[in-house]
Image (cartoon, rainbow, N blue to C red):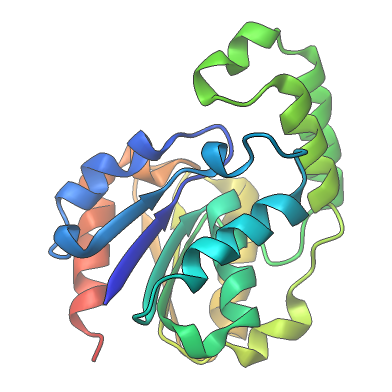
Length: 208
């Protein structure tokens, strides 16, 4: 059984290291690098999803997917397209229908930020803007019924932007539970790695 972790936009794979180290399944875990996935390709959701699928498709075992923000969108997309390949799903700060107004506002902020603010992420500012623009029409509402595996929906207590979607996802998915991480914001894996690891260990221990 493999445990795949997918970071969010603006993060790097290092953001998962503290979480993975504290899980009971660390030796069976892989940490996907979304930045490398887009290297040499146009920054679009279609391109990153195609590459993500190719990585997951090469894994012979059933997959336990855990994603944050953009990572959770990719995980939800793959699980809805290939439900037979997924053993469990962890969705952190997830959206199942992209909030267009929020994405537009985010892109306005990106345009105002200096290029240097993006250096550590491995993406250019233009990549952020293009990627967010190509995600604006994503809507998995009609695909959620195809997901039958156990699902853990996680949201940081301070992440008001994604709290509504997290609550709705928990209600719409057939086999789901919702966990709110105290004192954490959007980046739960960075804000509260120990609390998140504890929730993951509890969730994974209940899987058959």
